[in-house]
Each structure stands twice: as structure tokens, then as C-alpha cells.
Length: 378
Image (cartoon, rainbow, N blue to C red; front, side):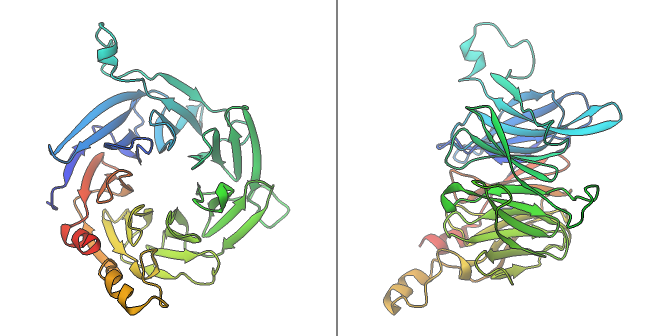
């Protein structure tokens, strides 16, 4: 077993994982199950490094099988769920905002819980029917608390919760007059930069950035970013214009959106589709990726990170900084999973801890190996 890693097992299959971004003290992750059984579950895990324990709170997700989870950076109790529901012979993807109760429900009431599940404080199903029947993701704005982005089918809509308003700002086009051949967006994410006005969308093998202040305003695009479908992306929170993508070609690529002809960094260490890519928010030279090859990889892209030593820096300052940047390449392979790893996420509290989730319901909380940690910080 890898150094100090811990395993938490779910009874049902699962493919949705997110850190609890609004929590600033404890290492916490949300996981949700993806089962065709009537009742799905959402688990809130709290990892205690000193005690070496994982504590969990379990909520019922009665709406349907969960395909995507995102937690709100402004409110630790709020998260967004994308789930499937069956209506007749048709399967629809919908979304809901879930609010956790305040404090411990056991302590708040003298009466014991009537169910094995902790009740939600609020469940708000979002009205996305007018946009389409295939919700891909709900993304909370990084700085505006009331703004969320909703990727549905081939549309990007911006919702203002306070005003209960929805505005479509982008729509994928097939390049032909027909609408039946429109391919949907795969996913999307807010840019950490550009004053919060840009939203990045994945469409087939391309990446497109839309300015949400206008309609159909594509700020820039990377066409054919991967040889096959692009599955995931992440923005470098510390270096403007840099993003990482992962795709069905098994590649992980770092791009500068000002120079989109070729990636500035590329690795092809996975042997199957890459489902998840994440920059470490504290040390962005570290990139986490997961794949349906059952592996989680820790890769260093130090030469293109915000921690890289600029060429014009003096030799003295270079000597001081150089030891903090590791050599580019694969650092570590984590192979404790036995099924496709759909999610791998860094803790938003501790830069050296991350969680990964495979389809068989196995959650593994792991750490960056000490040798790399000490090379970076000392």
C-alpha cells in the first residue's frame, strides 16, 4: 500500500467526487453513488491525518443516479448535483442544489433520526427543461455567489439565483444548416482569471472560451486539442492563460491560450481515456490525472508552472528558487484501484492530500510522497 493512504468503500457504484470547497479547516470530500437502485447516497467524508481516520455523514440522494458533483466555494453547506431520471422510455439528466443542515442533526434534536440518512436542509431542483434534457455540469462562479453556469446539451446558460433569471450565452453549432447533427458540449469550467467573465467549454476534441457578458462571443479556442474527445480540463489558478486538458487519446496537455497551435507541455503516460485532470492549487507544478486504465498519476510540469524560474532572473535568486521546482515528467503511479478512476481531486485545505474514486465505489485518500514534498518546500 502507498505511504499512509486510506481506503473508504461504498456499497454502490460511484463516479462523482468533489472537495468541500467552502470548508477551510478540515480535509473534506463529497462522494455520490451512481446506481440504478431506487436510493442513491451522498457521503461527506472528513479525513483526520493525525488520527488516521475517515469519518462520514451519509445523506440520501433520492433524485437519481449521480453523474457529477460540484461544491460551492462560498458556502460549505451548498453543492450541485447532476443526476439521471427515467421518464417512460427516456432517460433525462437534471440538476439540483442541495443544502446540508446546520450543525449535527443528532445534537440539534432530542429525537433520534427516523432514517439511517441525515435529512437535507433544502433540495432545489433547477429548472433546465427549456434548455434541454442532458445537463452536463453545474459550475459555481468563483467570486459571484449568486451566479452559476449550467452546461446543458449544446448550450451554456448563466443563471442568476437571486433574480431567478437564466440567460443562454453560447450554443454549439454543427457548421451546417441542420440542427439534428449538433454534438453536445462535454463539460465546462469557469476561468479563474479574466475578471470571472470567461467560461471554458469542451466540445468534441476542442476547447472554447466564451465571454459570458455577450452572446456567442468566443474569446479563443483550441481546435483539435486532442486526437479524440476531450474529457476534462482545469485552469491554473496561479498562472493566467494556462490550462490543462485530458482526453480519450490518453494524453495530458498544458496549454497557453495565447499560443494555441501546440501545447506547452504534454505527457502520454495513461493507457486509456483520461477522465480527470487537476492542477495543485498551491503548487501548480503538480498535476493529478485519473483514467479508465485504473491508475492515478502524479506528474510534474515544473518548467511551465508559476514556480518556474524566469530566464531573466539573477543567478543568485535562481539558485535559491531552483530546488523548489522538480524535473518534468511522471513522479508517481498510484495503482490501488481495480476499476476505472473517474475522479481525482486535490484537497482545498492541505496541498499534499488528494482523493480518488473508482467506479466500484472505492475512495482512496492519498498523499504526495514525502520525497517530492520535501524537495518542493525545503
